[in-house]
Amino acid sequence: MSLVIENATVVTMNAAREVLRGVDVLIEDGRIARIGRNLRAGKRPRQTLDASGCVVIPGFVHGHLHACQTLLRNRADGLELLDWLRERIWPMEAAHDFASMRASADLTFAELIRGGSTAALDMGTVRHTDAIFESARDCGFRLTGGKAMMDAGQGVPAGLRESTKASIDESLRLIRDWHLSEGGRLRYAFAPRFVLSCTEELLREVAAQAKALGVRIHTHASENATECDLVRQRTGRDNVEYFHDLGVSGKHVTFAHCVWLTAKEQRLLRETGTVVCHCPSSNLKLASGVARIPELLADRVQVCLGADGAPCNNNLDMFVEMRLAALIHKPRTGPTSMSAQQVLEMATLGGARALGLEDELGSIEPGKRADLAVLELDCPHSTPGGEDVVSQIVYSAQSQNVRDVLIDGRVVMRDRTLRTLDLDAVLEAARTHAQRIADAVA
Ligand SMILES: [Zn+2]
Picture (cartoon, rainbow, N blue to C red):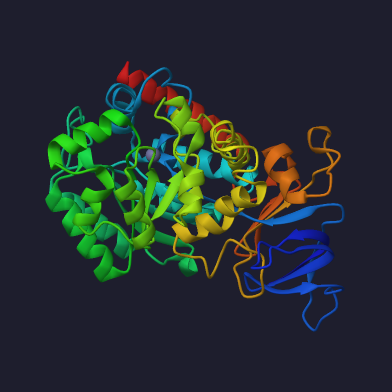
């Protein structure tokens, strides 16, 4: 399959951060083959996609997401993290069955694709993780996912509590079934939920297995002050320090949030290359605090961006997260901090790093996977464009500007119509299953 995106403005996110105007992007066998002028002519027949007046960007990569929670949207307001988990989220996660999990994942990927997102690092709940992978397999989304691991903790419902051995065994089974399937589009990441829901034995085993198998680790760290106090009481150490001592740190590890860090923990993150995922909507809605992202970036800590779960956001929209990431730090660190360029980097290259796929994703360069979004920016809310298209994308664009989306060179949305998901059916299933879950916990 060969496709030419014609006559576009291309925000490459290459090393020079070039923006190329009036160029074509040639896609062959799922990868970007060339960027240049007049690429339509060639030996092989080529489909074309006219992008005149449009801007092509690398697809957004969420570094922290919970597809299992999307059906719980708009059902958990006004709570801080631990109450939010114990009173609302864990009981509703425990009420999922396989069909509702599939409906939740389908809704997730429909929303993400419509918003220009092409990949995510996802944490499931304890059970039914196959339904999330099956959904991603069928709709073409690029997923690195894993089941939540929960073998300890207060307030965990019986439906989520598991033994250490069962948690490890099920994770290894999922790795065998899904890791590197669909040509590498689907990958596994161990997902111990957070320190408070995991035994030390489990975390040590995850650290060892991840290294042995070359699989990533995705967890939450230092999201909420009470959580940090409880971690200190239980372990005698700060959250990131504790993880590091057990072997849970490094370039293959992503920590969501990191709102409450000591100077020592920040140094550990930098020295180990551990990726931090900033989730501004979630941190605001759960009143967790505001992570010191400008300081982390200045210290060369790897930072990406993510929506977290629908019930703490309540969207899965990278434009929303970019806008907040660009705005919420400025009152404290000044108007030039968190530039549009830095924020777009977090949403693209930063996310690629969170998946360990920085050589494959995150920029538009020959050889990389063709995961792209085509934006139509001539809408009232994003016009006139000014001189800096990156600024226009971060500060004034919205998900409704996304016209077409490609993943692995496959067109999964064309002219705002999803091609691999039946949107009406997805919405109907989401409403039905969400109501069943709500009734089950009422
Ligand atoms: Zn989360």
